[in-house]
Length: 140
Image (cartoon, rainbow, N blue to C red; front, top):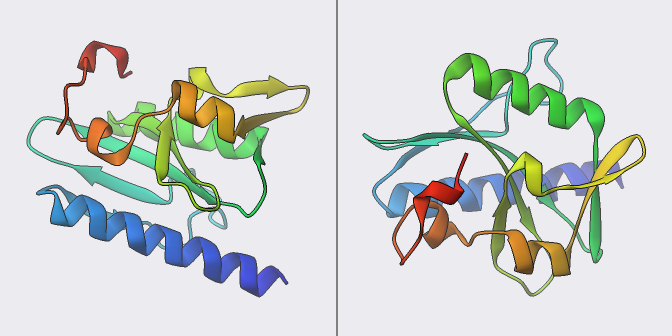
């Protein structure tokens, strides 16, 4: 089961790499993210104007929980690297949504994202990359 979850996550990361690169951004998967003793995001992406560090989550459920450690490591890396922190999440039969750490729901010792929260507060990949009519002052 763990292998299937890991494979699902890897497929999701590769899908995002393709989306960013085909949109004129450069993007890479960070090898060993989540298993390194140093903070590292799943994906680093950027263009001449912006850098984003993304923690990716793919789920079959209607709500996904993130550990305090995942969120803190993303925040630490992004601050040190000078990148924006984003959580990219994909629910069944939905497109990718991207949320800032401030948009996540605090649930005791962890953080959560529901489909409803993602649709209400999240950005699509196109919006994140500034391809639509997006107010970039909303990004952090």
